[in-house]
Length: 323
Image (cartoon, rainbow, N blue to C red; front, side):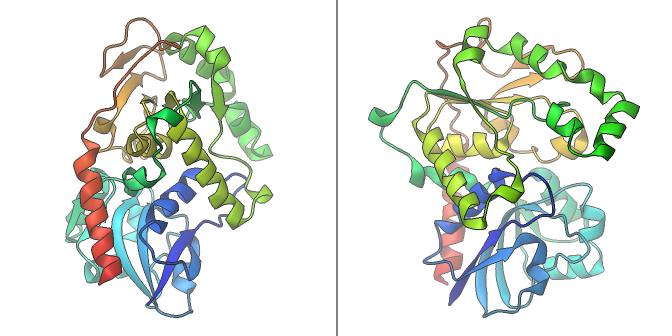
């Protein structure tokens, strides 16, 4: 048997390293990788018969997403966004998923959406919760605090200047006048000293600078950094979820108000120590005890709800690969 792994070749200026981290989670269950298959071109695959773990966010190619018959899939940690669902779940899409049910879903929204179409589906959580293979001994942990894409859903200079069209749109809809809101709200949550001393990481760099191999290397490098961190503060679920697996204290800053963003989180948000912030007012609440602001002396312990989810995911993936 041959094995395939998802790669990501989108026609976008920036790419999400979190996608590659999700593929690294799948890769650890494979004896080898014989084929790298683009998530956006699975329908076009014409190589040898391969087994693939299909996890993660699907897809930009909503009108031609159904994988080739050459691909033997395991659907776990599968997510369909609410904007993609009407197109992906047409008659052919539903028929294909029913052929491979039960479908393991990364979030409750996806599970319920598939169930409404008569597809047997259930919540699995995210496969990145199994990335404890990158975990290090506590003696290797450093004093470094990483702040990874905090409140990235807010208006930023990068988003405003993405293209001439995005610049014009940001003027017309008024978003350009919110450029300072992100820093203003972060200052309400995080102590100034920590904001100055922390190491900042961008998990959405420019796409045209990196090969597929370099994208995966970047994902591995980030996992190794997070594994040794004292604390990670992030709004990226594919930073926060791996940190749970790595045993690294993590605080998730949730500033997402729109359903297109929040639908990804149902069943996942309860796994984190979390700051929930209003993007309008900057007022926030936490689900853990926080006196004042997050600072260099803040000590937290991760919740443990993810352990049973990770064990179940490992069992499903091993069973599929060894069958």
